[in-house]
Length: 137
Image 1 (cartoon, rainbow, N blue to C red):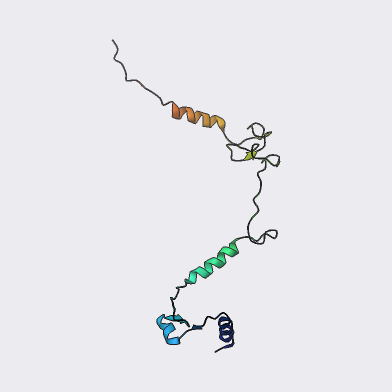
Image 2: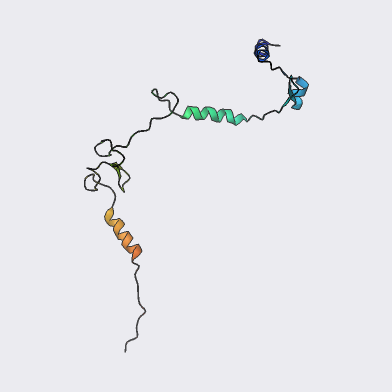
């Protein structure tokens, strides 16, 4: 027995659980504990170790939040950066969030083309109707 396995055997015996592994049985997939119960071998994916490491590497570490949870930012006006509350938050058609002062398109120089959108809606809702030609009498 090596020093590592001796240390594990000492800690396992302290908890009244003895784990014995027979080299011949381990190669055939049979593992047993000292009390007669059999342990089933668990297949280990080699890719699972690399993906778990890459997931933790991809997350940026925030010094204020060591667990990796990012602090949820409150909504602010895209024009004046003022904090907006629940009832005073307005999302424009250009995709930005604004306060009560800058909620109108003229107040924040909106990039959305309301005129073209209105034309498109009218064309969609009012198709061109052509009657069949009537013969001249």
